[in-house]
Length: 202
Image (cartoon, rainbow, N blue to C red; front, top):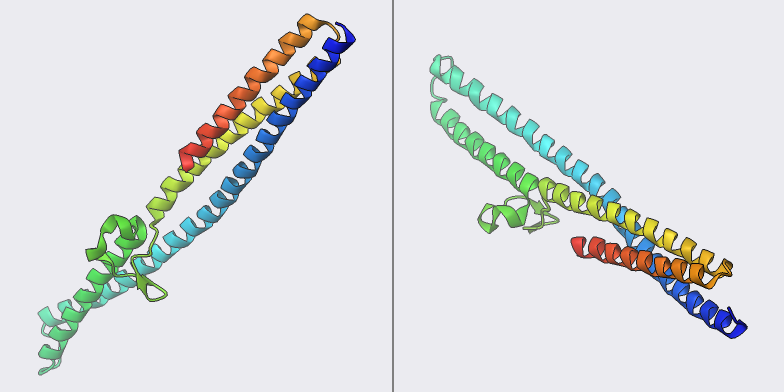
């Protein structure tokens, strides 16, 4: 290969390598953000399930109290004259049980899923702000798939850069062209997979 051809090839190859290296850097940056989001989401999901369990415990305690009072009432073990107060308390207990069930449902499924009529749990005084544990799980699954795709794209980008470096080292024109073409193909594949990963979450 003549010096002019060699120089032109090196410039062209260097520019392409720089472009794919830049795309790889952007891809890694986005992948890192999604990785951080996945960690945060995992912690939030665990907190949501703990919140759900605390509501379940409270519901169980209230149900136990209600069941005990009903048993005492049926057995005639209550003090005479307290029936009216006990009945009123039983009604209140039933309301609390229903509220706990609604709160659990909203915590599990999310405010948007249960609908405005079923909003009972507030966050800082605002209703309709609950992101359900199941919603978090679905989002985490999406982030996990995106992370796998970004890992795959990173592999293609790295192979692409290796082929680019090889094409600069080799002296035989035919081999240079083969490695250069391989670099372009792998770089485009890596770019496509990165876009696929990004669009899968966006």
